[in-house]
Length: 266
Image (cartoon, rainbow, N blue to C red; front, side, top):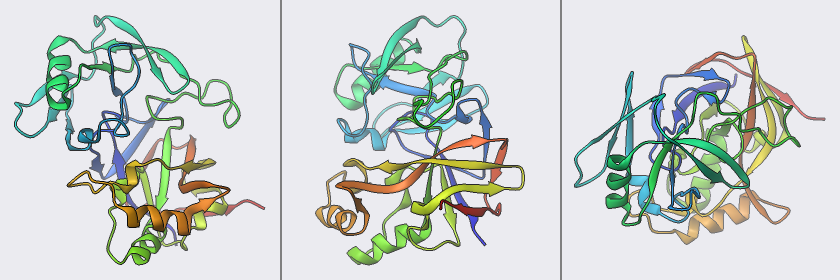
């Protein structure tokens, strides 16, 4: 029986993950997931693609504050909400939207860690960033995630990649929200949905991968054998595919150990 084996949120887009025992969903996806974003001086989003050191920035969410830690830096505390924060326009891929600026202290902290001028911004409570209408209905929103509220991956597909290179890979390289056990390797490629007793995860689009999963999570160096394995096992129509992007339907909470039912496309 397919089961939820691990769950993650990423409070700051492209920084370190936080493993959790449950996800609570709101209109943007998992609560607390990618609600903060780093941008350059022009408001363009910054990720590990350009700044691998972001992997070593560690958010720790609390009830009202986000604590952020990095080596050789005092911890930074950022409010999870601030109705008086000034807004600025930011860009995530092809989307332009309003975001709340988190202030000069946060900007200086992240600029010091990364060695570039950047600012931390927060998703406003009334944000309406639309999921691509080719895959969603009007009024389905997403946070600062690349394009979809949820990313699902499987233990068996990761194991196939690990076997291919002869050493274990961490699922965190692939930055999923939901990890599923008890299914066949790459079964997710045929999923239409994952049914839960309280709702479902509506599978909408395979996840095309960039360079981030090929980096060693400790050294941040690229590993050629990981790319070779991805090309051998996950190249479909010239694209590297691992995991599935999903929308949430009727599901308010998902916990580690919850059972799921696979629904396959014809």
